[in-house]
Length: 159
Image (cartoon, rainbow, N blue to C red):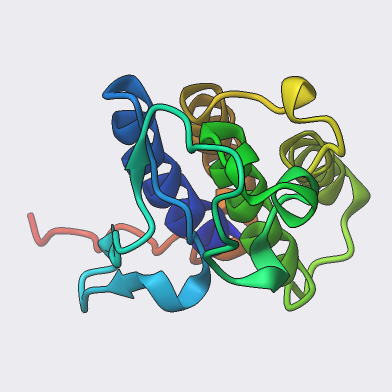
């Protein structure tokens, strides 16, 4: 779980920078995230990226499985909120592989995912707000990933 949160947070950090610059990625999906050996995630493939709004009648571009509902109905409706939706779908997909069943750990993550994939784009958080929440959740879930070892006795020194 912490790894999924960590990877999606990095994607959302990239989306936040894009959003602040007025850009929309347009095709956020796992295949467009490269993960380095050290775990650094990089969002790639900006073929469908655009700045501002699209003109009416624009063709659908992207990946249907990660497309926001408004984009499926009207491809010109692609906005930064539709990128947040796609990142939420990624996290949702990865949650299906999480082995923990601790409700206290999963509930806040599920609540965040639900807000990210809200049917109404105006109810989705910004990428920046998602980054802050994911960082908090990463810290909260570290106990699920890192188990402290038993304390070792201090060796006595010869006098």
